[in-house]
Length: 257
Image (cartoon, rainbow, N blue to C red; front, side, top):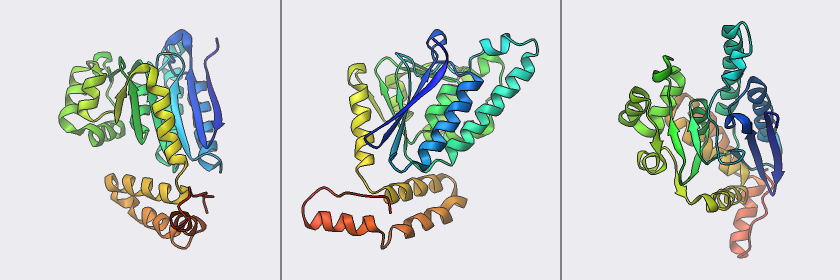
């Protein structure tokens, strides 16, 4: 089967699947470019109120598809092209206003870890493993990604993970704060769907304002944008709908305006 990104929208949830079964869903340059296109599209699509990123089968992603580099005589040039595509993806993810959930099963390494850390919520199946093998490969882990790792799990756990390049079991990842929840593999999709559906049922303007505020907590220069989004909820259609629904004891019907 070809390496590809599979996407679909169901009930307000955009499902994005990384599929490269022959290489444990390792990410090729084409997959990174396609993934960037899909998340950008879903971030502006009115029906999409949350996005779920997952891997096909029983693997999230093993990271970079290094076979792509070996297939080129100029492996340095191929790697630079891949890294440019990865940078473009992370730029898109950092500007994402729609909540992103990482649905993790199996190995989550290298670039896969960086993708997971870009998500707002990470839910993993029991048996999942996490790691950043950069030091074992002689690679300097990018500064921006190290910043994100420290923000999520703190300097002590980040030091352990980066210095030793060892794998974390799911229970250890949960204790470190790397993931939000660890659930049985058979219950993973249902748990993720409940979370995504709960987000999709809420007022989109309010959810986006909340996401902006959370990001601003780590990056204070973003506070002005968060304040703008909070102000945009005042007097909105959804604010009045939420209040009416509460008074009438019925589920609200939000429109994102």
